[in-house]
Image 1 (cartoon, helix red, strand yellow):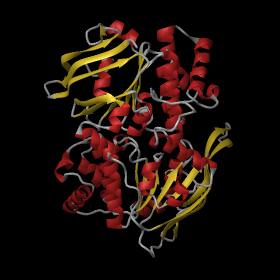
Image 2 (cartoon, one colour):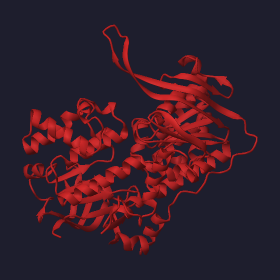
Image 3 (cartoon, rainbow, N blue to C red):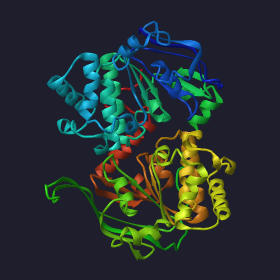
Image 4 (cartoon, rainbow, N blue to C red):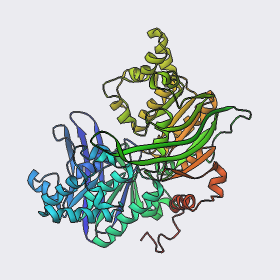
Length: 541
């Protein structure tokens, strides 16, 4: 193997602040996958961004260290040669595709840009290459997707477009920052096997940044573990998982979610009943505004939920999971019968539905995107009280303090702003915002997908504690089957907007009847049992 990337004693600081990364050294050889792991705030992404000097150069300092790529120090070269390396020899897949893709440009325009810049491809040549790349990353009807804008794609499709852009020029080094965070297990497996096959085909090196240790165990050749900006352990993947040397590494490996949810009290009455729920989205209208064609996103979905119970909803990206959650809260127009606490909600307009919003809350997937950066934590948590429970500022402040205490946050931090908190803390703030109104039902839309395993475990345990303490009911939407199993009493499996299987969660997990459910579970077990062959061949060296 030839040496591709060599980071030596790299130290990073911002302005006059303390070092956020200190004396980090790692190397990556051609044709090798090296995983960089650690909790949120450990310095993984900052280290990766420094390779291409994507950190704000007005504020960043590199007191010590070198970043050698093909024996050239990237920290010292001029901007022009660095631009030629970016996207051509080194590409990066960013963690959040929604904020990385330009909402004003089509898929074709965004992929074509890098093809024109680095390879001079334009017009039909560029279009043909775009179709080839989208097919390569597994997007169906690739030619029809070229004119789509990011908001017209599911989370998994957006991530695939990001991967297509990164691979467009067949780089020597691919930096993948949480490339499968927003993807369900079947798509995760497809994307990672795609990256691995391309890596083997092109001799590409991959720096894989992830919090999912099951993925690391399956795909990485070597692992670098970071804590508080320092490398605490480096080892061959097999050695590290078999005999971790550092206590922090052992703690990461032990951070598995609980095996089952807390029991539901017997005799609990029905809280939510949904019968024949349908959601359609108009795709074409006539000049007079009449619907010509529509996409049937959710088809005849029915389920029931009792007090203190959790319904897990699983399925691939685009299966209708989030759409169901939005329909329950009238954030999306729907047909069918929805009853909450015995009251029929289906025929209510927005004004009539407003009193129920206090009792039905939602925690969104991306807490950073759903928390206003201009509001303090106290203002964010208090906002619902101002609308639904008018009272004196003193009473509101006491309720805010109690909600923050319930989710394990220091109430004295309530005057700070979202950017001052880690990802796990921001998710706790989002839960506190929902909890402060003392709802009966909370819809949890992928609340742990972007969190490290240790933080995931904390959030799951927190949700279980709150459920027991307040008798909460949850609709839990997730692609992570281990997390779903830890929280759910009932399970509903969706495919293309239709229910393919539902029932008690443990029965579905242990005895799935649908072939689709078995495929989902097989994909999840694929990561949990690394000795199983992948596609008939071993996946580790």
